[in-house]
Every structure is written in C-alpha cells, then in structure tokens.
Amino acid sequence: MTSSGSSSVFAGFRFPREVISIAVRWYLRYGLSYRDLDELLAERGITVDHVTIYRWVQRFTPEFIEAARPWRHAPSDRWFADDTYIKVGGQWRYLYRAVDQHGPGHRRPAVRTG
Image (cartoon, rainbow, N blue to C red; front, side, top):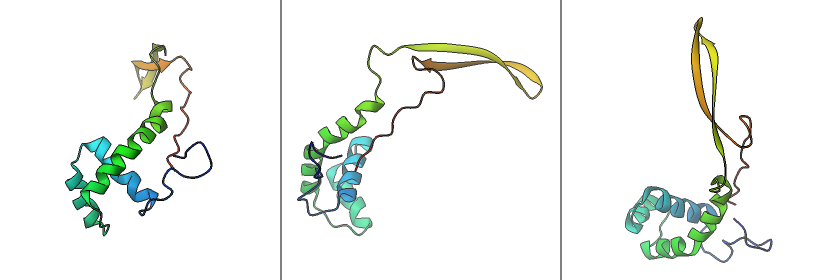
C-alpha cells in the first residue's frame, strides 16, 4: 500500500509496516479486540499499546479496503454454469463449475500490500 507518491503510507510510524499490517489484518479478518491483538503481538515480542492498535485500524482500514478492491467482483460481472462430462476412475461423471465472464482460465491480478 502506497500513497499517490512514491513514499509509503507507513512512513513516519515507529513500528515496521509488517507489524502494523498484521495487526490491522487480524483485527479486520478475525474481529479480535484491540487488547487481544496487544496480547498476541506481545507473545511475539512486540510491545504495543491497544490504543496504538486502535489508531492503526482507524488510519489504515481504508488502505486495506482499497487494496482489496480488485479482488471484488462488480455487481455487473456475469457468471455462468459450465457443465461437461469427464472420466473419473473409468466412469463418466457430470462436472459443474462456475465460470465468470472472462472464461475458465482467467486469473485475477495479485494485490500488493507493501
């Protein structure tokens, strides 16, 4: 995650971006309390106050949302059911799969967080 310039959005913070990122990600993904995160980081040798984690979450949540945006499908995306027969263990089986508008081999771009 970087701002519009070449400088990092983490510039000026005391802790490395990896520590800030993991704390914010754990908070957003697992719904841990700030004190739980304080304790988990302390178990890993990182002493940080729960209020600091709160400030990180307030500051960096929009950055995480923006970084995740390419992974989300827009409401107008189209999905199709693809069905075919395949041979499994010598017997023919019916296979269903969901395919988006870009086709079965399409992969989404990786999201950079740092």
